[in-house]
Image (cartoon, rainbow, N blue to C red; front, side):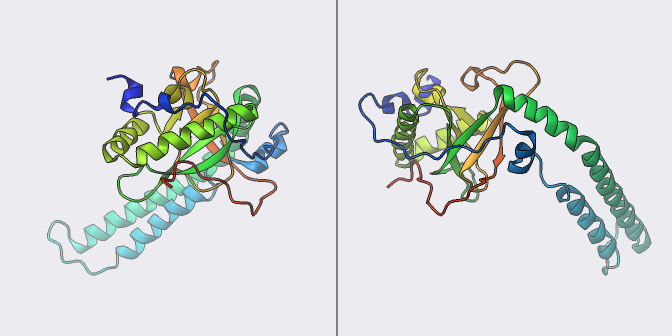
Length: 253
């Protein structure tokens, strides 16, 4: 069975006639390094890792005083083990913070240089496709903000029709979820609809937002995603938030 058959033959949903125009906002400019720093999130906030580790250290210290009736360790031995573990978490918190201070700036500079050469800013559309086995975490459709309006409309229409078909078939949903995870959560539209369907991705899940950035991994010339190139997505904040609702794709309606 071919890859496209595993996805439910999505190429049959590529529109060949006229499609309704897609309303699109101009993308935020990330050409200036300062704007790139302010509007993107390539790493978690600096405090996130250290605070998590420090919290574990505090938990170990407090838990060491909890009543203990076990037989494997004496009370003193258990307390010493928890204090040692807590100290390890505390040291790790400091180490992570220092590492972040040393590497974040250079990492941002390299990422911006690579973004200027290969990066993509994409419109993000929430879908009704759940890609998690336990809770509801929806996939997103990303459409390159630089593609022509007609191509963007065709991509939106193709994803919408295909995902609606997927949502109606439980077996197909399972196949798509499996293939989605096999591709590290990023599937190029060419893989689904054929070579004429460049400019779109099935991605996610992540927190809601109008924009998403894509950046090739590694340092060399990236392969197109449809040819096996490894890409990562990252948050792009909206410099001009709008109350206008972002249209969804493939919600089963």
